[in-house]
Amino acid sequence: EEELKTGYLGNRGEYGLYDYYRARVIFPIIDVSGNVIAFGGRIIDSAKSDRKYLNTSDTPAFKKTKNLYALNYAKNTQEGYFILCEGYMDVIAMHQAGFKNSVASLGTALTEGQARLLKKYASEIIICYDADSAGQAATMRGLDILKKVGCNVRVMRIQGGKDPDEFIKALGAAEFQKRIDAAIPSNQFLLKKISESCRATEDEKALSCYKF
Image (cartoon, rainbow, N blue to C red):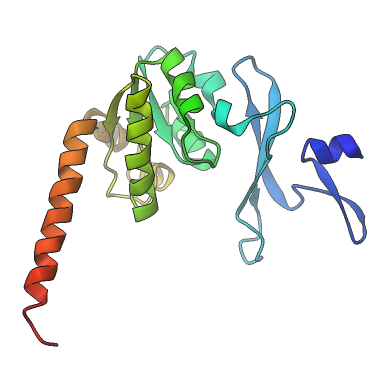
């Protein structure tokens, strides 16, 4: 029982020992050597109030900050770069569509340890986080960390869908490839964000002149 608890596979509740990932779709986390070291679980019944995703916390065999989802597959590709996504479903959709150099940071903000692991296998990283505000904020943080460890970084813009999974389902792999080809260097992305921020500020100033 203690081993099950330590490995985040089970826990004891009011009615006895229960499966930690009950009623969830399970995503095995595999290290670069091919060993299953942890799990992620997505809830099946979206009407339930439980968290959408449940992930293995750090154990003696697993450290979130030193592993990446699907790196065991992506490291064998010959593309010369990785596409960094936010979640399991994004990576699975991209691998199914032929983009087998895709990885994700296991539900955590990208860490320096993960960035160094990426740098070990590819010198260029294309960030493809969600198009919402949280995803864009994570992109900004990721840029700093990746550049700190010496990676060349580009950023994809996927306005046609909230995330890569939705985009590919809606528009297909060919359109997604176009977005990869059009990914912009990190400095250009930062200039765009500054420009957008300044434009928003100017719009706010203009609106403040009117009474509603």
